[in-house]
Length: 124
Image (cartoon, rainbow, N blue to C red; front, side, top):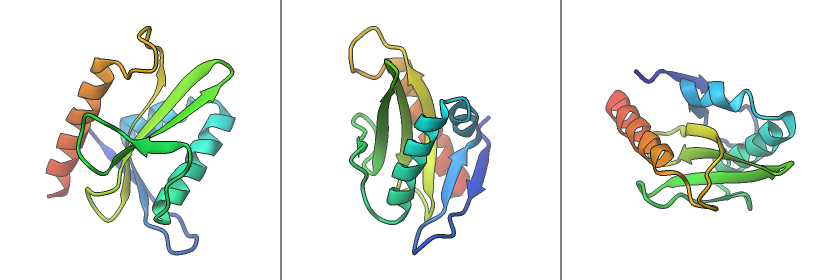
């Protein structure tokens, strides 16, 4: 079962940022510098802009983006959607440990698709 959390940004004209609970739990164990950089990128998304650290996430619905950061040789990712609801929804956060280069592992993509599906169902 997927559970959801919502947080609101009280800055400028921004949209709320909401989290799939599992994504928030995973995000909270990231290094502090990574969390801060990702929150900056999410704040820009909430304000209608695209961070230089974010790019469209291929292989799923339109309006889904990936924030990709490197920190001390490790790769961290957060996936968010902008077209599901009024909110910006953070769907997944993970440390990438793929042995296949920069490609996102298939099990991560499958998890993202499943969370998107459940989130859409919950919001309709």
